[in-house]
Length: 141
Image (tube, rainbow, N blue to C red; front, side, top):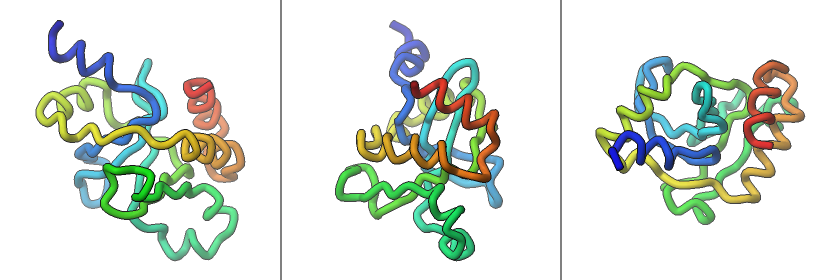
């Protein structure tokens, strides 16, 4: 079995990857949560902190899901899935190339409890576009 096919078959929703994101400011390596693969990767950002502005607004804070480091061995500290925005900036080829270059960028799966919380946050998030909600929920159903 070729390596690319092997990687492609093992990229699944609910995985956290550490990828170089050229669309962040500044461009950098980030933890991301895969919530869909085909026809294009659907990604939510994982952040180490919740921005103070988001913390101060209950309607935005409800779009953040805690990933506790104690339940997710691949995290050095508690982190948060930001369900306010869906990213489609990384192509499948880009992700495959990054994983092929360094398999360590595949971190692991989030817990079932966190998966349920992400789905709930997506459903109630008032700033996530309806089209994005529908794409994610169709993928994860």
